[in-house]
Image (tube, rainbow, N blue to C red; front, side):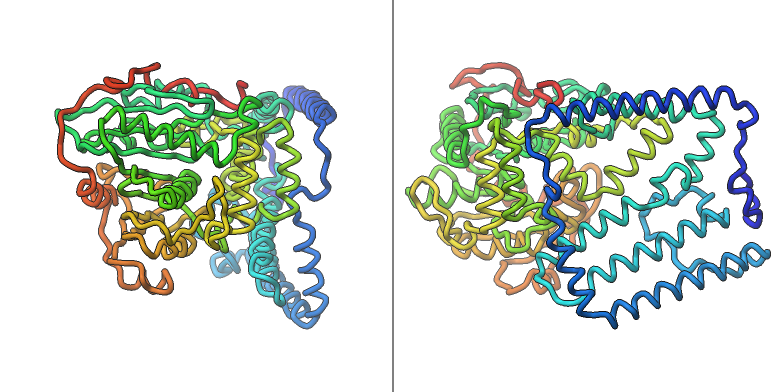
Length: 606
């Protein structure tokens, strides 16, 4: 491919075509394997007894509403279209200047946003043809998204859904996703005589087979890691288990420990070992080193055997595990932690425990945990009455297949988590880079049907906990009943549990002794940020009485580094005196070594 930006035909120079036999042979392999893959996917679809839905995500109503808004605002559409034409004409004019040798004076009409890696290859900027393709796309994408966001009036929830799917559409339409428009793919294909596409189609076949006929894109090399060997390696024992969870107690590393144990409820949407990813990043190992006796639940990757489980049974299992932790440490109460969906479960338990006069929990820490869902982050775009019906149909065997949740999370960041891997894996034929965090992200879990339905319907759709209308164990729950100390952690860039949503829920716990902390980064790195890494920062302020979280943020104090030491200072004061440490299971007995067996069940192996 030429490096001369004024030579337009150079964009299509293809070294290697003189040796056409190898290229043709490789293309024949690609075509044959593609047909076989299509047949495998068609076969799997035919065997799937779930009904096909023309609009499973219930997107069409919001786009119909958008179309009607455009019809009611023809003047705005005309003005927007004229603006787009003007920009495209300007771009064409600058391209002509470039072709006539005036490229240095032809500044870009538009450039990729900071962090956009799709157009990082030099050819996208140095070659006039690809530069034009790139800028034409960016102009159209920006215009489309602005038009969707700013046209007419519609309910805020519909607007967010329209914005989300418009963004997903324009990301899918990127020229970087088209082999014949991507200079990197063209260059590699010609230089390798199509061998990259052969490797890519074999990778595609492997991913389709891994998904049993559905495409499950590999984001990392799943064979390079093993749970219990490379992650989830902090020493401990499984001291109790039920039909849905195992309870792990970690081995002490200090001679003396705080008397009151720390009991962690992770989300069942992902595996618990995000909190024990490796020796350098492990939160549980750090807590153990600070002198805490740490227990954590390891939820099973559910199948038909868990089909009868409910939100109440998850609460009961958690309550039973608390009893085991208290018996093991010979204490009457403990401190509790809830992460994400585990935080929502923890909040419902705290409400119910207050109703019953249950005093086994002295304090609670809620990581990225929403209890008020009126504007509950980007996952909310997948949830309404119609989509819940579709999800219910997928859970006829008692659980939601893991790939359904994995696909939803990937769609939240489709450019990074879908399309970049389509290009790298299938077009360039590169093997995914081994990365423990992406292994965890791909180590997806299924959802127990009734638990998942309750989560979507009662929390996301009805917002019943925040309204004081949720009923569990025949008790109406109210967040205002919680009166113990609560430490709320909300990462600043969290798109799953936004700060305002977490803050609104904290305010509803008006009788609790609330401490609200904002950390740097997002849903994962904002929580898992060991002090030794020296990354990010956190913001603190006394109380949460302010009406709006943005007002609260204006008066905060920023501290560099991890928020863990701040939490440790808060938690240590609620953990009692120091006592002599003892091995896990010394009182209740042990079942097996940590990380146990439940966490090792992979959805692509069941």
